[in-house]
Image (tube, rainbow, N blue to C red; front, side, top):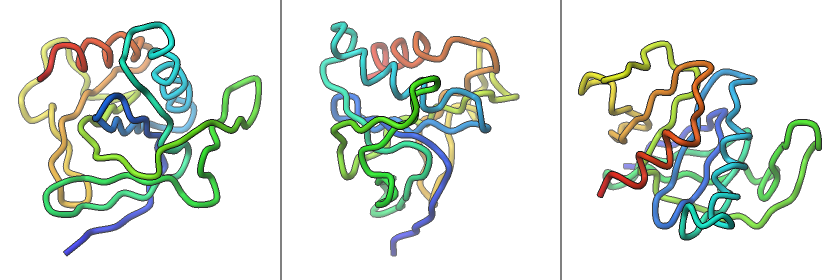
Length: 147
């Protein structure tokens, strides 16, 4: 049985890994998505593409977490200071990582229970990022050092 919900988040496909970016309003979800999308043009990631920004549909199905853009916002991303921009996008991605921006439980050496999140009844690897920390280097390190 599939479990569906709509959440306030952004998502990017990096290679074959979907990255779901959550956090409070103004925490930099769209900015991190934009930086990840541009990381492939800098040779930091092999392939990146927007899945969605602002509102996403998440579905837990067969032990995997699927993420899709809200239909009305497909291909749109807000870039602070520039407004809404249209980009190529993926219609669905399997989430491999959840990045929680502004996470109050972020730690230098996180305990095991902090490194997973349960979303739509699916357990996903979690990267908590403290408020004020640069998220892009942490995400690149996580992607580059995890099989």
